[in-house]
Image 1 (tube, rainbow, N blue to C red):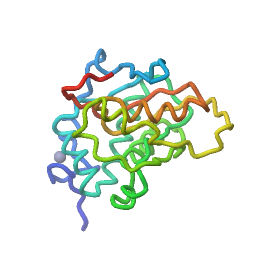
Image 2 (cartoon, rainbow, N blue to C red):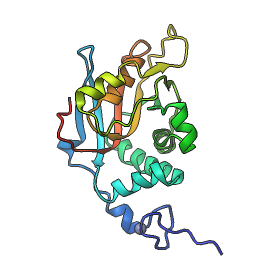
Image 3 (spheres, protein in one colour):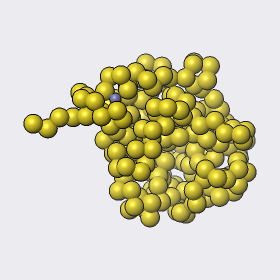
Amino acid sequence: MWIQRCQLCLRRAETVLCASCWLQIVPLDYSEQSLTLALTTGRGLAHVCYAAYASPLKQMLYQVKYHSAQKLAYALGVELGRWYRSRWPLPDLLVPVPLHSTRLAERGYNQAEELARGMGKALNRPCCNLLERSQNTPALHALTAEERKQVLQQAFVYKLEAERKLNSRILLVDDILTTGSTLSSAALCLEPVTKRIVSISLARALIADPLL
Ligand SMILES: [Zn+2]
């Protein structure tokens, strides 16, 4: 008989993680969950973070990125959606931050899309790939905040006809927040079709660079 095991500690589990590993993910304090990312237009982008980028979430996201843990990404998305539902206004649709097609082909899936699909399931809202990554940006973790901003400028394109106004409440979804440049750049790309954008990340990394 096939036994499901926790993807982190390998103990028997009912879902992709055992109950004890789920409990180790502790959401941030209320005061740290909500922040505003600066857009180059001068407007702010409301942002919500679920937890710190620390153990065990850090190991989970490593599995998701490098060990094909697609189901884990989706399950984390469902968890994130359940948490979000009782705290924040519901969006009309969820939009994942896209991966460039080359990286998508390497990994086989976009972890932000799996998170968004999981959230969509928990929130009963559709997940739509409205954005495309037009440039294959280099790995961002070694770059400073300013370098990230430069690299990410015009990294995204909106996939539908530009004149089509959505005016929907969009929740932009990404896995890890560092400087906020990726989400800001993606949000700017959506601004011509809707101004009602908020964003969320599963984990917030703490780096030496200022957030804004
Ligand atoms: Zn476990």
